[in-house]
Length: 99
Image (cartoon, rainbow, N blue to C red; front, side):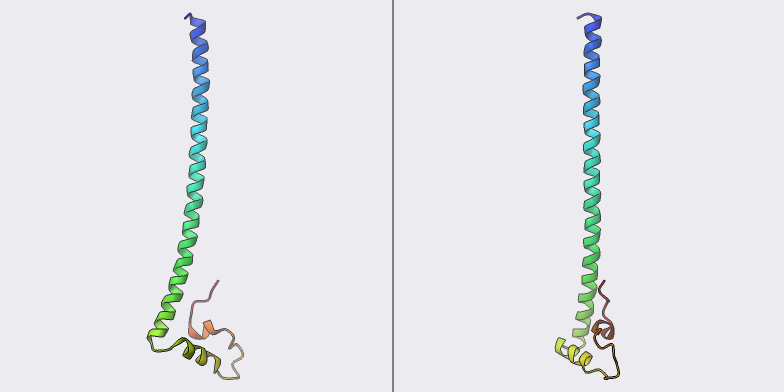
């Protein structure tokens, strides 16, 4: 091989290497983006599960105090007739307000 052929071969190799490097970078960015989205989804799921845990914990605490679900409903529904906001049971029980 003479010098010109070697230079052409070098140029072809450089172009191929730059394509490989570019493709590798794109794939890394795609994977990072996918992992960030998955992380955000997991954080949302975790927050939702914490809210459910808090609600369950509160309900369990109420039931442990000896009140059945029926008793809770009766207590809330038999409130003073002058109390106009009897439709919001969660506030009367002190349960977390669902968002």
